[in-house]
Image (cartoon, rainbow, N blue to C red):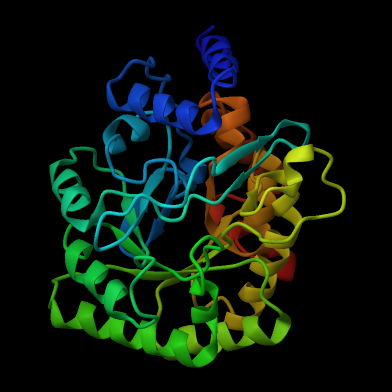
Length: 353
């Protein structure tokens, strides 16, 4: 009954402009307008990573709650963890509207938001007030008019390392000019070295894990460079992947012609291929988060078998509503038991064995 209520709410949201619908969804979560879904967890899904316990591996990707206004309410929807952001040092409005487009025929979304957010100060204040115990990460971006150097990422580490469960260096959004060039060997090494040094200087009792989020559009040699730089700089994890600037030929919706990053099921195959390749490149030494096109327990399971310890979703929520979270968890638990795994960790990377 509750899930059907959410489905009606989701259909009503689709009568609105996509960005307005997003604001309504965040506001509804923030003010507890939507009823809380019944809690459902299964011990087989629990993961311990970076000294933190994740009750389940299904997280909410960055982009939904950019400004950390609804963290506690969103965690009550069954997510194992939440990622806020991307956050830049100074507030910025992002790119001109319209900048968010549904592709209903493909169950996909194209966005060219451009890191619209309230800036470090406002998000820090909200993060400091959060009450829920489940892990919350902060995705760090750079201001559009900042130089192409590590300074904005260093500022993000200093701002959030003490009040978050992990940090993400985002150099892979297609919507900030020049940003993806920072995935090259030399600039990426400079950023990761500076961010790691800033974290060490804070002398935290338990250093906050530092992750890197990569694009799905990297060539084989570029992936190898990223893996080598990440291993050399002691990065604690990677998110594979961000949205894609490519347009698969099978897209059917007229909205496919819009510029921006494509997310949803059309991204699944390429993002999972990058995830699998990165797992082999790092030899399982760096935990990976699988993101891109997850819309079912089977899709989440495919990411885990390809090498992901945790997974993230977002676009599928737009079409299926928040009841999707518990469905993915139930389906995933069933698949793990079907294949004889006693815990999720046993399944991580199993396609490579």
